[in-house]
Image 1: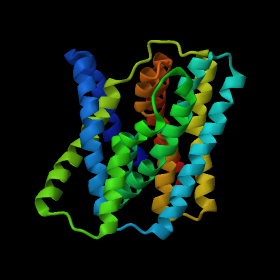
Image 2: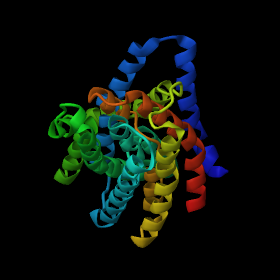
Image 3: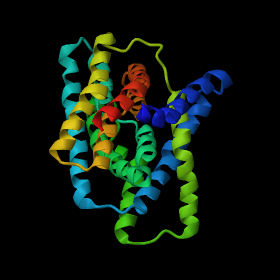
Length: 298
């Protein structure tokens, strides 16, 4: 109950975003612009600010990164089984496959910060930033036959990758951020989580039957929200992660699918509507499953 209450404000922001879209009639142009602003400016600033100032212990971070990678590989393997388990077109499968392992960074950072403060934010920023390249490699690779997007181009211009790498390089350099720069980045970071969660809520859509039907959709949702968190619990014990890193790994595994999965599917000529359905369903379901996993894992 305590975990649920701690996360309730963040989930209420998601629901508020959905309500504001319906009440204010601001339209796709406004919400699309807000999501781009968060994705390209606010969240990279948050990642850079958190990692540049963090006291990173690489000896203990390595097992966390290994745990995250194994969690993601589990999602890829199980997600790939859907092609043979359900009647799905190649395009629809290639689009929905990524929903078994991609993660919503906005929610992950919000939850990590709420439970563990600045150290949790830095740990989640490091983990999600490190997992963005393999997630994009798998997703773009599966969709590559349906579009002309270059994998290297996707990674090189991904703002989360850029923000993470820049923050790590600054941290390793030993330099100290000038006070005005730190305050400026802090203001951007403060806006990131609130606006990011509002944008997640505004993007919720469940008005279209996903390709492959509800059977394949249930499979992808079960892999992402049930099997991967269970794997995270086992891997956390296997790698003997400390309490905070176990929480971070579990949060990462239990996150709903990122809205960037829809953007990628649409840009590469995939089944964007089915991906949007899975993103929305996983986000709503995670409001229940994520607090339960955290309560169970403690």
